[in-house]
Length: 279
Image 1 (cartoon, rainbow, N blue to C red):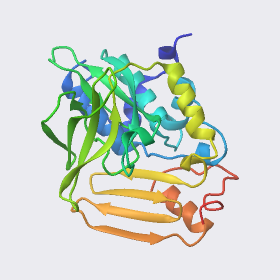
Image 2: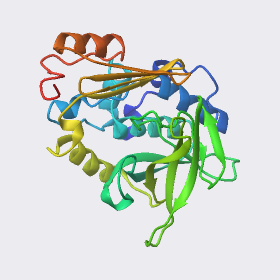
Image 3: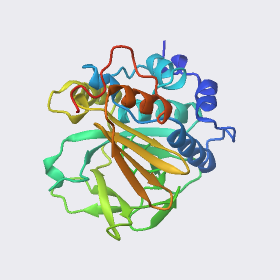
Image 4: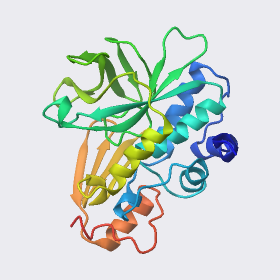
């Protein structure tokens, strides 16, 4: 049985609240991308439990679509890929190095998944990514072209080329940081295609390696039109649409579970201790 036979496009679109068109065009790509970003939270509760999440389409449907759960980049972008392919768009997996906060590009491995999307009638492909757990994440896809600035969901992005000795051009997605008043690189990537088995390996590494930050503390993100909410360990940060930032430290396991369930819309698995290793 093929992957598409385990994927239910109707259920997915209902889950993200998309009631627009289903044509293989730019309007549908933008609309579905934004709806997904504003509906499904980013979370790492599987790695926190000591296991890598499944990327099988049936399991993604059960967890992200039919369950009150979210996921991290491999889950989100695999699910989006299934949806876009079902809508008739051409999709290729890409892998990038998260350089946000890094000293050099080479200091980080390729552990992030994003998508290159071909849209019929459009002169250039688009970069799509609904799985980057940071305030600088894309809310709408951007053309794979250097230089132009793009605004979507009150966020500004651009793509640039970075110096690189390899045979392929090195791209970087940059987001505008209002506090620093400058564009900051989020991740770097080439256009080399990656297949599902590659992401299975990356997923296992990120989800089980004891050196991975995702295996030690809860890391959750949720974006709505009004705010971006992030939980990193016991630290809860809310960024409003006007740029106002508030933060506080959650005081215990009971409060953490209430916040995760009520504010992030995530059903915490029975037996999982959220702050045991993060406090």
